[in-house]
Length: 157
Image (cartoon, rainbow, N blue to C red):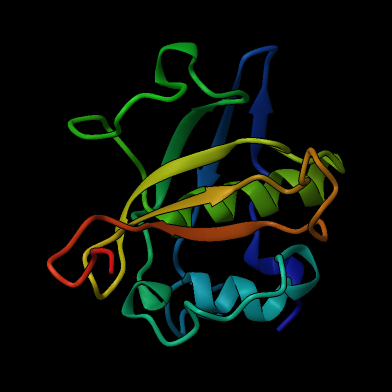
């Protein structure tokens, strides 16, 4: 399958927002688009890490439809808790990131992370994004991270 058939070219933009039709069904109807599939087909865009490869959330998809997202972090969300906010699945945000990049040759959210409504097997919330390290300490690449929450097995000695 041609990997470019996986992404959306139906993207509308203005100064602040991106509207994109996201189809979660594979072009040959053999399954759905997941983070694992996106990473497999567009590995050159991802930061080289593998902690999440066997996580169940890597095989989660998203609902097909039109989505409207901000080109930048919403100012009131910067440094704020994501609890109670309308968030999107990591698979959807990643699909939009890759689609936008392949169509426009521009990196979305180059230095910012996007909170997602996705959780790892330990119950930690997933956030994605930040392609470039502003301090240039790390290689460039789309990042998938988890926000470690304090649990009973955290402490000090």
